Image (cartoon, rainbow, N blue to C red; front, side, top):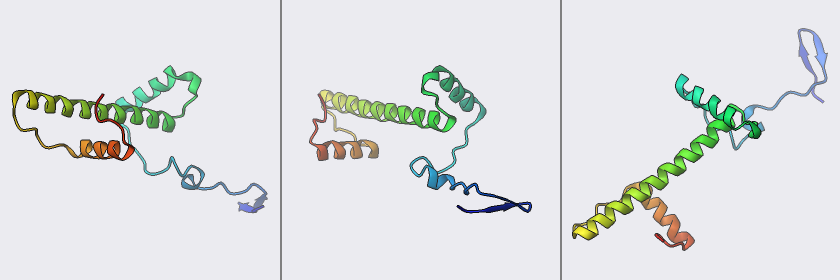
Amino acid sequence: MDEVATNGSKTTEPKRLPAHKCQPDQYYSHVWLDKEIYTQVIAFIGWEKEKKSNIKAAVSILLRMELKKYAIDQVATVAGVEDLAQLEGREVPPLVDLVKVINKDVRNRRLPLRP
């Protein structure tokens, strides 16, 4: 084991690995939250007591949920605009980049674009 000298005393406790090596999947960047969002994250942790989440895990869960909702809303909006344009006989507006990427993923997985 590594011996670490602290103020002349020796311990046999090994050095702790840095955060990016302990949790490589969860360590990419710092995210700064304002007080209102931080309060809401703490409230989320309180609501989900059985999951025993820490702040990092709670923020990760909330971001995943909101990003998924955002993508679904964007696809639904684009589909609605396309359908309306086709009904009115107008030219369909160009797709936003997010929808292009989603459509490409759908084609690669051979899934139907719409039910």
